Length: 104
Image 1 (cartoon, rainbow, N blue to C red):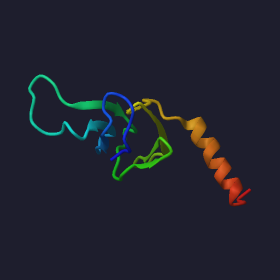
Image 2: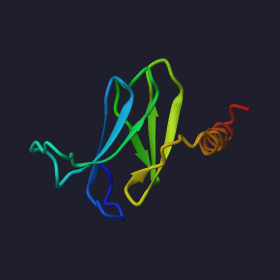
Image 3: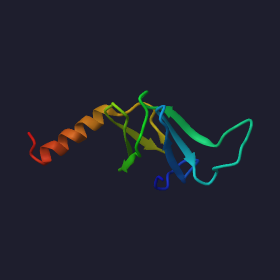
Image 4: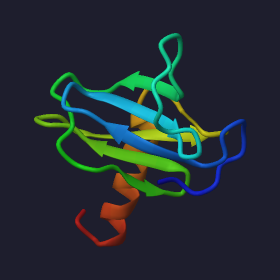
């Protein structure tokens, strides 16, 4: 579950599957079958190897580790994930952390 978000769907949660899809759903509109629509807020494709774990959330960022894949970071704004993983910002964050624990 995510913290309350600005945007059209303030109460959301994330899900993922073994085929690598990431689902953003509105927690208040889950369930019930609709033949012509679904209540999925957003669906994006992550790594083709899929997910076998849960995401981590920190400072409006979502972190995923795919099977046989690297750690991916997605920004979240107005309740939507940026479809492209933000690798450059993640690399800078990781380097900053490594310097802080004096690995280099």
